[in-house]
Image (cartoon, rainbow over all chains, first blue to last red):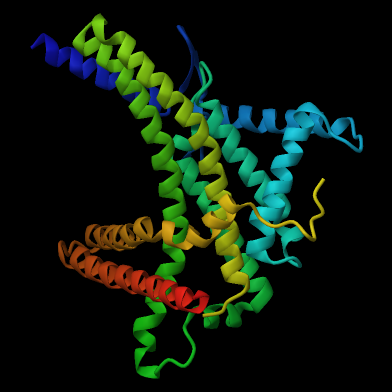
Length: 265
Length: 84
């Protein structure tokens, strides 16, 4: 009985950490956040929303600092930021979008990369929460990517040309009623998969770390060296995954936008 | 700084770019089915026709999932033939 109750309490402690709340948890301090309802839609300020604001603020501050002292040879922090920027330009934007179109989409891709990266990493610092471990956040990000795909495709190929390009050429007319919904579904599932991938990756890592810590409360104090060692290893892996998922999200967005611009089968 | 004109993408990113479309295959296959089943489930709730639309949605999802899966795999096949 007691073990079951303990199990339940450790389960709820995991849920407590990964779900969104109407208050900001700073250790023992719980700061209540306002409930706002606009036109019947819940627009409350929640913990994850605050974390996204913190991420945006850090993004603005760190990028301003890194570009302030402009020398020919950047040093320290600015050098790291420049290395990432060049990496995204040369390895993500140019191969997928082409030399000509890449500069137009660079600001979008860079913003996407750094925002997702900062959100991922904010979940790893004390008192932080992972905003990208909330499916609403990743769905919105994927929605922006989807709007970008449609916008870029329609801009480059025309409204009619874009939707015509989705359907493979030289298709018998009898197959058209079947193929049009199928191809359109394929267009929809791309951003859906983007959303699920980022959400699941960020959520799973946190659940694993918290479960490893939770084992101590279930089995007793003697397992703590092992579980803390494992949790630390997972923590290191999480840092890597934070970077990797930000990169994968940006890469796949660039790839999909590229596929919408250059429609060939 | 490297000259951007002569810059070759690093091998890791090159590998990621070539496997990128296939990395998404598994998730996309499931995502297609889930999306259609959810749409069907929503329609069932709306029109009170359970389980008709959920089943139809599932069937459409499976068809669409397999179609995109095979399309990607056949494309991969063609690509590897061109490379060799």
